[in-house]
Image (tube, helix red, strand yellow):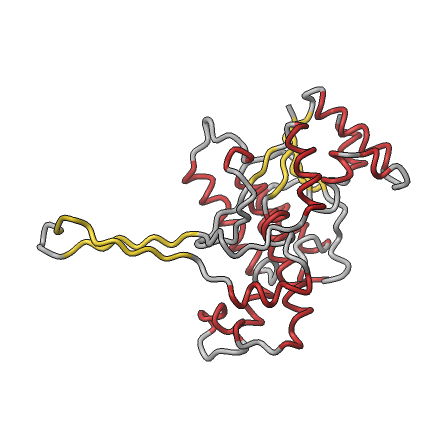
Length: 264
């Protein structure tokens, strides 16, 4: 079975092709939909569609300025071998602050779930989560080495960031407002309101980068997208030069819906 990651600009059309009959790729969407139903294809979508991208564009600066991961500190009831207190610090996602109000996306997620499409994730420390996304929505972890998958995602994220793509744009914005670039998250809190549009677009590029990394982490066969990074140019991982570099580095195979139909 062919394992395909569907990008944010094609997944809705594929899970519900009858809603896009006037699209030039309508026949391809229908063919792919039938291939999923007949178990020729296994479909996956990145959870960033429902976490980062689900946040409305004009609210993204406010959200990222106020978002803080949860930090829990627990003192163990025993001492270490050298008599020191053991303190366990857990950093996790804050599930209480996501707006989780995008009913449009929720509608298509429900259709995707019924079709058998699973979510994949690129785990980050204290990452943004959507409380409406249940763990049962994610691809099964059978025979999956979690540490290996994490390392693959991390390696790909680092490479994408070094290209100036993915989360790098958001980090660059935040680092301009603090003396230490490592405190870029704090810097975003002081970003001028005129940065709102850039922050919104930077978060979209962050989502795209994590989609590619998650795809690589889960060892899927093809990444189906119609995104060529025309709007953000070289900041986009889907920009021709960047996608060629990441394809060569990690063996990622990018396809359009038309390309995918030729394969099936």
